Amino acid sequence: MGALTRIASLAVLVAAWQFAALEAGSRLLPAPMAVMRFILEEAERGDLAHNVGVTLLRVAISFAVAMVLGILLGVALGRSKAADLTLDTPLLVLLNTPALVITVLAYVWVGLTETAAILAVVLNKLPNVAVIVREGARNLDPGLDEMARAYRFDRRTWAMDVLVPQLQPYVVTAARSGLSLAWKIVLVVELLGRPDGVGFAINYYFVQSTDVAAIIGYSLVFMTVMIGIDVLLLQRLEAHVRRWR
Image (cartoon, rainbow, N blue to C red):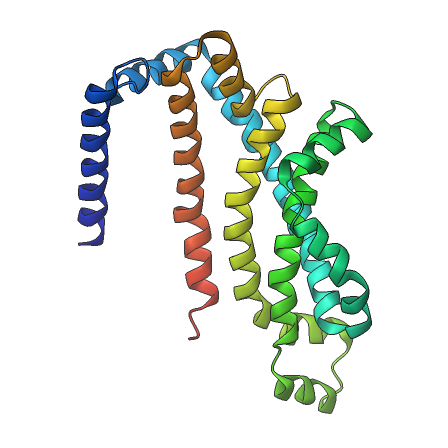
């Protein structure tokens, strides 16, 4: 039933798109088939696979780095009042700094390099992860901590058997929200200063010919890939870590 509902809603969306395209004109809003033709032509040239692959690699690297650093920072903030008081304001500032500003500053300070691109995405995503994980670290079951002390768990045993299981739902939540944020920021980073990727391609077709079909086509392909990762991987992982409930 759920699958049929999703298919029906998608069909309604495509029909509405077709109707809007007829009303707006093909230049302002190309019809679905025009966008599909562009996607197939771009795929045949090899540009689509290259640009999507490069962007996915940037997303994967920045996502992994931001998750690791964000989890470590979040646990530290959640378990230490001194660390929380010291770092809460800088974290809040970073959390509310526009992604565009961070990206531009990273390119200015580091240069138009791959390192600067990854750094910009990490700095944008890390606060989001840290804040979510901090809440998890603050809400650990005190009874389990008391049990760990009673049985004299060493730090490794405590981390694996007490901390990690309780943090898993928060980490998966941070991963889902962080992934949706990371790929959008990667596109901005590519648009501003990289020679390839989905963001670069969108900017290229906008500047060179204002090709709306190309802009929508690249957006749809990458959105589809990201939704697929979320549905096939992250949602299943979230259901797995929450199964005890």
